[in-house]
Image 1 (cartoon, rainbow, N blue to C red):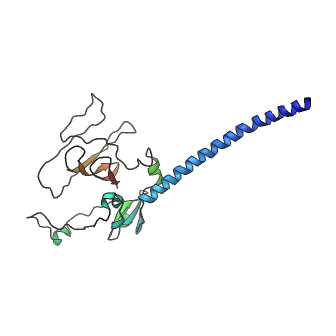
Image 2 (cartoon, rainbow, N blue to C red; image 1 turned 90 degrees about the vertical axis):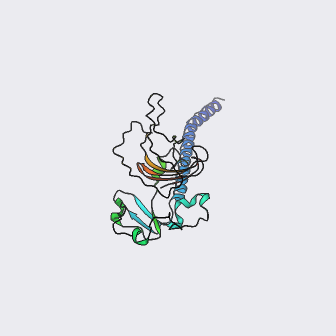
Amino acid sequence: MKMKKMMVYLWWVVLLLVLPFSSAGSGISSTSSSVSQQTLGVQKHLNQLNKPAVKSIKSPDGDIIDCIHVAHQPAFDHPSMTNHTIQMRPSYHPEGLNFGESKVSSSKSKRVTQLWHTKGRCPEGTIPVRRTKQEDILRASSIKSYGKKKQKSFPQPRSADPDLLSQSGHQHAIVYVEGDKFYGAKATINVWEPKIQQPNEFSLSQIWILGGAFGQDLNSIEAGWQVRFLLNYLKKQTKKQNCVC
């Protein structure tokens, strides 16, 4: 009888010793599975963003510039651009303006240069796209939120003083022009050591081309500076975004 009680006691001791190790093993397995799923998700997203390159150029600052065929650029991933016909030159020009070949190809025009151009240029028929890295996506709050603007609303077209009293966090100044027809726009943007205090703050300078009213029917093309050069194409609502290049 004593031997039987001793065996039962030993059995409970062994069981108590085994359970913690089993739980720990299960926790490690669960964590590894979660990390593996995240890695697969990031890699899948990278495969969607990074198109096959005709040529790749390693920039001195560490970036890799992929020369993508013009028909395979990320903008055409947007449903609205399905079966889009690429038109390299406009079919007509505004009356009274001379857009002859001699003017377009004038030697006086300055070529836009960037740091990676010291290592080469993309061949004709391709466009340069910075290759997205894994750490770029991991810096975002989630995979789906990567590359999307956090701005929730458009400021009304008027000059506004910084709203320091209400602490809304949105401080901006706008210069705008309205009219009937516009055939182009350009801006000189100077960003000099923008100051921020919190990790979620940013400083942005950009030019907008707008169509529609400030509301649900607003269409806009935006280009400017926010850490890196950005180009946004928004259709109808700010939630529907094509790409950030």
